[in-house]
Length: 94
Image 1 (cartoon, rainbow, N blue to C red):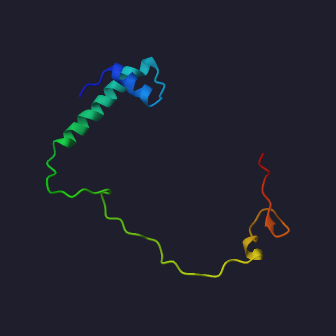
Image 2 (tube, helix red, strand yellow):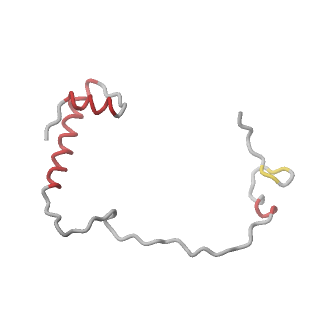
């Protein structure tokens, strides 16, 4: 499927992209190649194939939630680069 340089510039404008004039023809060729491939995929018979969001089956790798005691102030601040009066010292943001 061919896409014209004018269409490339229109889509670039909609996407708020600044494409150099020298690159417009190359982009039109590349987008045309991509659209040809999508057209090839559209010709594949997918009747009866369930829709999927992933090519492979995913399983949840998270552990079960278990209630635990919270860290005390000393353990929480143990690896802090700077601390003062039981609190983290962070850079001032203006």
